[in-house]
Amino acid sequence: MFFDRYTEDAQRAVAMAKEEAANIGSPHIQAEHLLLGIARAVEPDLKELLRLKELEDTLRADLRANAQSESRQTPADLPLSNPGKRILAYAAEEAVRLNSPGIGSGHLLLGVLRESESIASRLLIAHNVDLARVRQIVGTLRTHEDTEQSSRSIGLASRIKRRHWIGIAGQLTLIVLQGVIVGNSTITGRHLLVIASVWFLAVLAWMKLGPSSFFLSLGKQNRAKTAVIYAFGWFYQVFTFGWLLPLSIGIYRVTVR
Image (cartoon, rainbow, N blue to C red; front, side, top):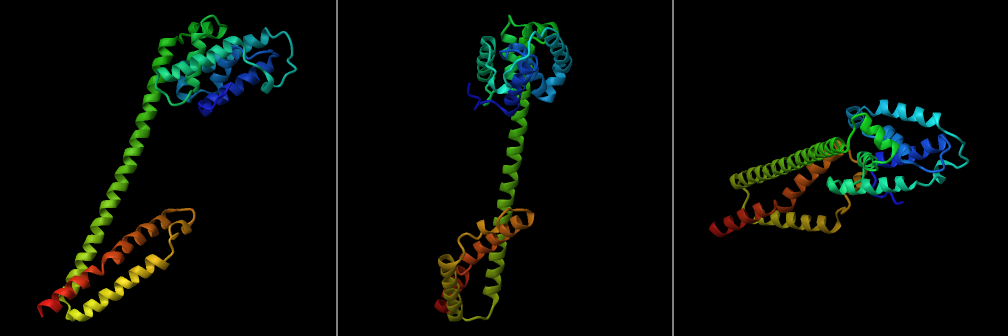
């Protein structure tokens, strides 16, 4: 079996099911062992809602009381029984039914319930854990997780967008202020053209010879380094296009005067 689509808790559930089977000397991993593994690895919310802890203790005690031999196999060598294989197939179907990207321990529990002839399924039903109820709970928990993740993504995008516009507003303010200062200065038009030319050459030199890996050279980022990146990018934009101000004002003064 391949478990690439299994979530971490589902992988733990299968691994723990192997341990449970080996502990009581079973030659195969049965539905009961999968249920024990699921009860140990399932999400805390689902475990509490379905009161799986009580069921787990009862089932483990019954299996140990009826154990007949000691297995010589390690947990890794134990194969799945045919019901166990069907449970994994059912779990995959339930993940598709609930539009889940991965197969979780909740889907495995649904798979156990669908193996209706197993002791595990009967025990679940006896404890008021039926297929319809579990399917609804698993689907609700999944929707809640998706909502939380979506909210976090929207919040992050909102913060990034807000910082972006604040940065643009700051750059425009500085450029306007620079234009006012240059416009009210007594610098001649020719001198402004010289300043613009030198500034433009400095921009070309930086673009050609400057450290292209500046951002990557900062290494692992923290708040201070992130602030440096924002500040550098802010001033870099002003530096790159600021020469247009003395150029335009210089041309105007040379032409008019």
